Length: 211
Image (cartoon, rainbow, N blue to C red; front, side, top):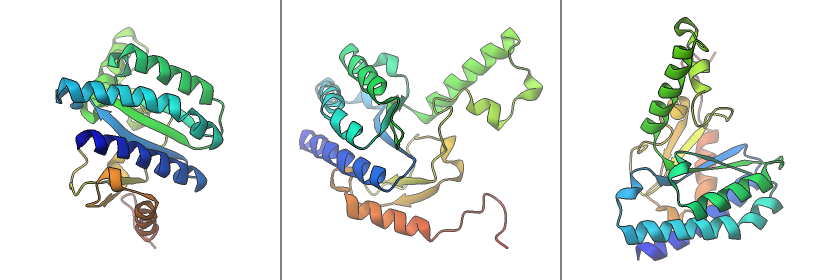
């Protein structure tokens, strides 16, 4: 059953990605594989890696047809060589596309991202590239996996869970949150429309006041 769920989840990825691209949404980030997912059975992890490799090959036409740029965040160096190869090919082939950015979070964790950024920043401080007095939000963001990307405006959490589960902890500080009991394999265009409609009704103040 878990295998069937993963396979149907790929169909949801295709449908939601295509719909977001048609709506001219600037960026869609999908939590594809967390660094905690390695704790699952070896059989399931191996299946997920094979499925990811197959997805990267099969969806190149979808990516090209929708003018999508593929990017990734996470400790991708730990992924299997076959996956890294296909990921590199897909990103290279789509790098000049001008449409939506599709960002796959692979071997990703929000805490790990902050730790990795801190290590890189500390190394630059030690080398004299950065000065402690100059470090602020903008400087720190330059060391994040998501450097150069936009922070999310909307975070959609499926499956009835009421938590962000270590996803983009820094980046979602001001994002609107939308929760649904629908599991990702069943999450389709109509659910996306519902989330976007609800988001459109919200007031975003970023700590300020609406006059």
